[in-house]
Length: 196
Image 1 (cartoon, helix red, strand yellow):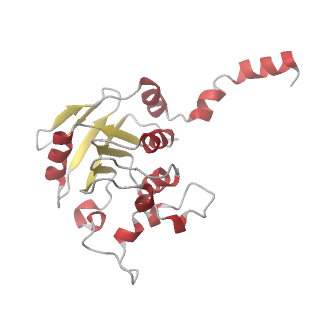
Image 2 (spheres, rainbow, N blue to C red):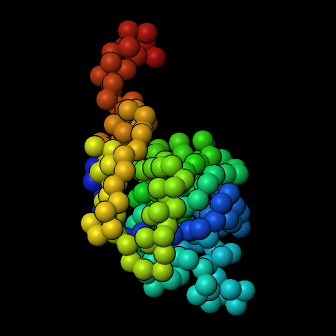
C-alpha cells in the first residue's frame, strides 16, 4: 500500500445519503478476483445511461470532478454489504480520501485496510465543503499526521479524529500482513521451538 501522510487534491461532491456498496460497485461486476480494474464500474448505474453513454447529470461526470481524489459524501456512506470491492473501486477510480459525517463501520474499516482515509466531520462542516465544491474545482489538503483538513481559498479548516492504529497503518502504507511481517523473526523462532 502507498503511504498517506499529506494528500492534496480536487474534490467530487456526492450529495446523496445512505449510498450503499451495491450502488458504489454493482453486483454484476464482482466476478474479478484481483483488486484492480473496478474503478471503471464505480457508481455504474448512476454514471452511465442505459445506452452506455456517460450521464452528464451525475456528480462524478461534472467537468469540475475530473481527476478528483477526494470524495465528499453524505451520511451513512458505504452502508450495505461488507464487500471490499467498494473501496477497491473507489481507490481504482482515484480516490484516496473520503469525507462524510458517517460511514458504515465495516466499510470504514475496509477503506483503511485498503489505503483510503475515511474522514468523519460534523454534518455542518461536510455541508460547507459540499457548498464550496459544488459544480466547481475545489482543492483540499488533508494532513493525516496532524489530523487536519483545509483549503487555500475559502478559509475552511477542521480537525478530525482517527484511531491511532489506523493512523499508523495509513502513515506507513501498511496493511495487516505488513504488520504481521514485522514479527517475522519472532514467528520463525517460535516455529523452530515448536517444530511447526
